[in-house]
Length: 91
Image 1 (cartoon, rainbow, N blue to C red):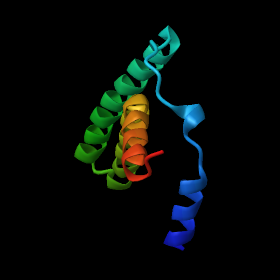
Image 2: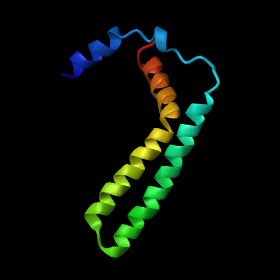
Image 3: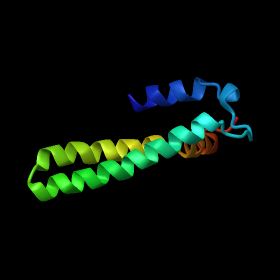
Image 4: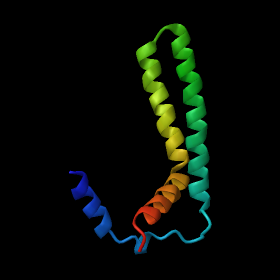
């Protein structure tokens, strides 16, 4: 299964997705800040839920906070993944 997946990735052409130095649009920056703010707010809410004894809800809200944090870092994660792919499978 892993060999099959590696063959799929090796056949994938990254030429169209090469990272060019471009500025992020205003909408991309606003959404990143909004996701980051939501992550902070959700983590405080999860902490309050833990204090009141709602452990199951707190775990779900912490999961939402973590996913919001990942969403706010999506461009950084994308560039890291593209660098790793370029190191593993150079052109």
